[in-house]
Length: 194
Image (cartoon, rainbow, N blue to C red; front, side, top):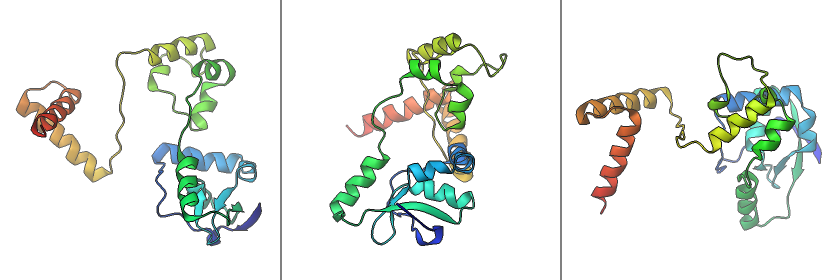
């Protein structure tokens, strides 16, 4: 591992992983609050200083105003191995053990550190530091829930367009919710492709 000026490290334009909005802000804050994390998990680059692992960390380091970053140069990899490394470094193997999370960590810390705690765990009528048993029950309830949520991200222009089209289709087809409109669209597309 060595430290280099941040300007020498090049983002990988082919990086398949992105981080947006609040999660990115949390990553920037975590780097500001705990910069030693970068020494423990440096950015991995190839011999041309292009990032193989840590593209989002690099972006967050730039946003945090760092002048230099720790790197590891992986200059012995073939082009195929570089591609494999990029995918494997960005994949999320495994799942969270919600029982351990609920019993060993504070929910506010997990949220600050970028763990997506579903909104079902937060109750506006309660203090943020609620009982761990209650969190455990809420986690179980979410995991076993019959209703799930999909979050889609749009830029402002796309958002306005999608929202207006959802409203238009709901009115036109006499549907009650955006969920009904999405199901209608999927079924229409599925039927037309047969």
